[in-house]
Length: 542
Image (cartoon, rainbow, N blue to C red; front, side, top):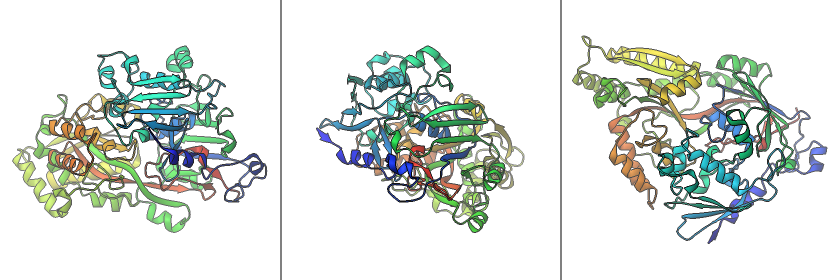
């Protein structure tokens, strides 16, 4: 058995550790910084969260809220390193197919009940149970949990999942294959515990403020859908004495320029910088305008299912549309926030990933445009028979600007007639998930820092393969990668298949482009996953 003691030490001695005398004197005990009396953090969200239920939430902003309301086995520190959560540590067998997590005995639910290994067993079974309809059930399959695939497919009972409570503080997990990054996957919301008695009592309404019971550093005090949600400190949290922020307010503001105005007027501590405004804002507010790499991609996905347009079944059409997108104009002229162009699905910032050579990346834009025209003509489209398509995106000024620019490129270079469709977030997710689209905006932020968190989306059975791309060789390669000592040649071939078959159009890889008040301290800019926890933040005295 191998013990991972370094992980635990990192979690127990975080830079935000506080003791009661330090709080009483309003001084940070480690840095000596003066703390503000009002420890309220207010930030902007683009859309309403998809859910506050750990097994249902599927968006980035919603997951950030869930990380405050619930706590999983492991957490991440400000640099993205694995640290202790509810689990104080874990051991593995020699084959690394059995993980045994030791849970802290002082972990409590917000109602005072003890968090037990059984709460994780219940939550994980709930995630794979088809009756739950978790949009992340496929993620539990990717974790290689014993019987997960059969349960998700409806061919086995949920209680056959490879997870057991040995006792209240010991959780045993059984895998079908050794995954070197398995423990990192437990930082994802889908693996967080759920309170069985509360879920069963209130059903779909169990996450309402008056009903919800969580085990995180904060409780949900208020929720006005489409407007705001408020989290307040959870006195029952095992590490409450080391938490500084008292209140966290998330405001839903769809318009990025409105959000910026409210930030500049002092209403917000953090907001996204509108597309194209970073160069100006970094000059005017050099200490507040930030740009740093993020583990996310931005792309368009083709509907290749039976409900998709016949034109997209022709790879020449897909390739032509991808070639004609001038990514440099999008990243430098429209966004202008340090985002790199994307010619692969996986971002360069991904740990251990070597960006492979793909033909398109080495071509000039003029060469790409010429090749695009030739391919589309070969496919039978031109002035007398223009290609027509519909493109959908969720409400956002930036998404609109990019979609308008891309469709103008297609029109000017290829004569394509494109119709744009703008949808509210939950409607958009449903339409895309049900293949009620032709071409749709897509974006993915890594659930863990390894290339498979992106490339698994291209597998035929992936829950987020909304375009229903199906390539047997890619499926085979991704299965091989689970047990390979060296994944580089495997991931290189997968990316080359994507570049050749073009199920998606990679556009750019994300940067975190924010306006951040200088009195908000300890934002994890070095964590490319941007898994942030409010309990690690604090407000400085002005």
